[in-house]
Length: 222
Length: 263
Image (cartoon, rainbow over all chains, first blue to last red; front, side, top):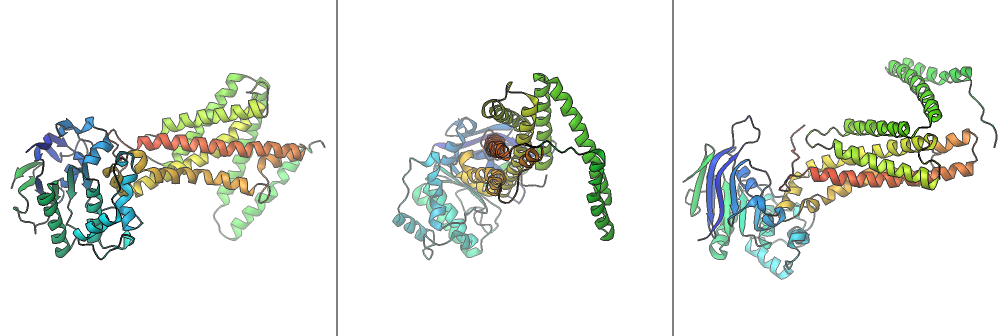
């Protein structure tokens, strides 16, 4: 397996005088892997994902994507390859279809063909959203449904790595299990590389093939 | 045209009757404005007399460098007034804002006095300073509104901006709505002024010229030029300053630097 994402000796703190969030943190994610990082609240799980896709700048160490430092890449190009889906998805006041397709208007995605309505409807079914039409107002969906729409939106851009920030934390057990089943399926049948962080205790340590614990500013294999 | 009817000292003091009315109202209704009205009145007299003497002196000197020096002082003061209204501490926006204001105001005042009115020399203080003052005064308010709106919306919509960034948007695409709203908010007052002028209100400059004995048809020409100038300078200053300041809200990785925490 090819290494897709390498993090070496990463150091980061929010303010210089404050205890760092990470210190000499290392991580390797290979192509096609599903990697789960577990940790308590406030240990920096979301921050780690935000640093990878450059939503925040780090001070020490290196983050490499396909052996290239992420800082050497055009931000939009990097974020087309590594898509971060936030814990609370940001949904605009428009239809489900508009929410799914607005990223295709961005310069970096213009070469991509917009999926047809038929393809979108098929995907909605795969994401257990068959009861929702493409013209349904996205703001009226439940948080669990919005979470799945946000996941679909990211997948339509066919990223090389999906960074999922607590995708199940705001959901009830049934919706959480549904979302996790989708994630497992994406990895197992489509070979999608996924790095997911969670503090959910309902997910056992063997829920993903590779699981790390984030503790004391470092990662250790669970 | 008729001669200007001069206002003598006693006539000027007679105007204080209006202040007496305001003071009485404040006293009767316990408005607590008595002190402010007194201070305001004294300041109005002091500041305007000072300005009158200063302008008389400057007009007599008729010196390019002194005229430009006063223009710079006016632009610097305006940028500090903008800073006081915007109250942003996280993003350093003062220098680009001042430079944009200075260049835009200078070009506008130069264009109006030198080309449209055709004053020779173009910097003649009797024309250049009042025109510059009007440009600075109006555009300053527009800029303060635009920048305040930009920072507020960028903070409120931080999640949406970051979602767009995460889906491949560049910083311009991710913040295009906030940019548009900020510039529009800054420009609306000067556009509204064009709609209402002559119908809802008679502009101060035109009233002043008419009271000073100018032909109303000449006064309106000046006023039209001033209105057009204000719309143009407001648009140019707001767009350039908001473009530059918006860029400063993002880091090298096009990450949004504005935090949502209270400043």
